[in-house]
Length: 299
Image 1 (cartoon, rainbow, N blue to C red):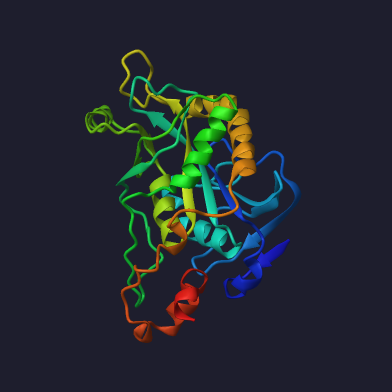
Image 2: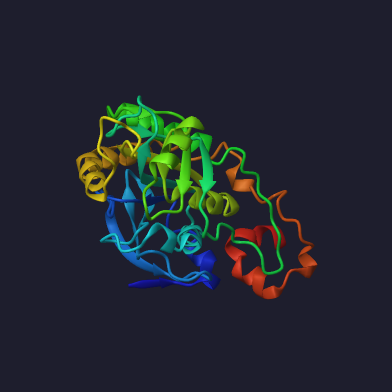
């Protein structure tokens, strides 16, 4: 099994173009060929699992199970920094997230997909930046997902005959508990569309890493607010995800096939005007630690 070290990022930067972050119910990627597993070592520790590299629809893809294979890791336990930095080390420029979410709207039904264009962060215990330790950066995050990749995901869903909603707000809670009824009603009053426990942290880190990020939010339930449905349970979520697993796999394959070669977004230059600290004052250890994402700005 290969190993990838942070200081060897230049050698690793050719291994994948597109990353897929599999959420609840998606622990592997069908259709990958010429596969190999790599244990990626990052300055932020170990990712959730070994990364599976392979070819999909003619493109180099890196797949990582966000919660680990077998679903071993709580949302608050995920090493988000290691997961995203591992993708950066492997050369990933576009990261597709697949996640289970609850619906907060009558017209968003279990079994349907939503491609969010906004996030609200209600987490409490997450480290959601690579920066600090002598280096300050403030990236723009008004549009937290990549418009180009989001369009590809929505179009791929339509192509595959999957009901998809092209925009909406994903409110991210800490978990692992599901919402109280009061919280669910508050989120509905605020007009949020779906609720989950992972994506906003990934999105923030992907932006800092200058990786395009977009989400396929797989709606599994109505949280606890719907009078005609029982309160959400983990077994219900998994059952719905199993039913939708093939849809997700088909949409992902189509999205990878249809992904344009060139990025027409600003994600790849997110740090261009974000680095605040005088580089002469940044500790060498910090520069080395963050080389994969800031190297082009300090060379």
